[in-house]
Image (spheres, rainbow, N blue to C red):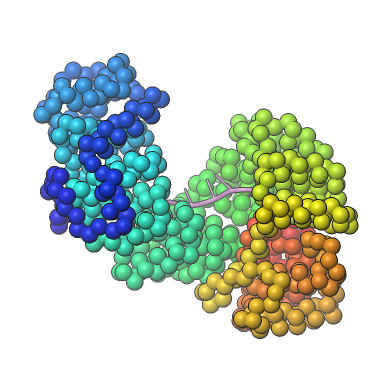
Length: 607
DNA sequence: TTAGGGTTAG
């Protein structure tokens, strides 16, 4: 039963006011809201496209058709007399326009992506005393979420509370979505907790909100909450939860969701299939990627894109290019994202000629305009291959203004190929663009350290201290028995991790006997060798690995996710360890995957 | 007859 379907005009019927609701009510006054909304709509209405239609009077149709008729009348009038004429139409037909007709107009404008029109109709409803009902608000809130205007969003929330519609589950779900989209996720969560009624869609709105706000662990927790609440997850639910697992690299959680889909007979539609492939790709599980891809019937450009970029990030450039050829053979039209995957595959594989050709073909054969991301891939591809001049020329030839990311890609190449002169030129540009980003200083410091220019290193260190710039700490996570453990790099031994340090000390000793040499090139400053060894010894990925070895069966693949790029020393350490301990280790760093097995890495030391 | 979905450089 919908308790609030019956209209409660201006009743101030509030069930329970939370902090958010109280705050909202203090700023809400319906007349003020009306004038503010009209003002908002007028100020933004200048660019609206309108279609001219003919019409004179309202025929006696049902409400939806009358709503559509009115809309045509409005469009026609607006195209001839300007946006304000909508109010004149309302005035002319005062008394014969009802809320159902207005709802129909609001929803149709929503479908046409004319969100300001939806809001304008809503504002005029109050002006002409047409009372909204419970069907009005979901559409109005959706339009507000699309426009992402926080002021209007809070105003409409105020009206919802004041008119007593906060208990309508459709309206409050739309409100949760609005708060997740353009207000605050914590306020959305509070609203959700206070809702007297919720259903699967409300849970979906919250879980989606967490994922879109990058609160991936909370999204997975909310999914568990949904199951505990007895709500039935749908295909939409699992798509969003899988996306959270992808971001976290949470393989076991993702696999569990896959089993859940199977046992609960959810459809393996194109959304679910694509989300599954993406999850497995971002967990470094290429075999599962292929299995799901062959299993699903329905595919679209998204599905192909996650497959191609999945192969690329896992170091299987040839497979990515083969998948791209197959995509074309099966008559799918590639888009800009497809070419990002293709160029990324060439980049990680060092396929310079192929990359140049694909970049040309993207423009000439497929008519796609390269974006800065595509140039970024090309600069990285050329830079890694040592073609620094060509990479610089490409940046200079761009019609788009180069961004810090593209300069940093070239700077990394300068470090790899020891080109200090170009590195210094770039760093000056970078520090102008991003004076507070510690990563830039660290990159330059690494270039100086490599050439043993300790005076410059010291000067740079002083500048960082003076400006209060800190290096982003390395952070790695590993999933053991469905629990994600996180480790942060540290120069000090923390007492609670003593068992892990001991394990790490033993590992280092054993690996040194088997050919591992501590790489200290990446250590930042001019410090003694022993101290440098110490500073790379407790990198977060090594701590995660030591913890994984201590807490997993011998045949278990270890999967580690790192927030920065894996360092040279850790890369060597993992290679030797995979040989000595016969373990398969997968590391997802900020850029790509490294699959370590029998002393080798899938990146073939090219990263 | 209303609310909620997947991909993207380094």
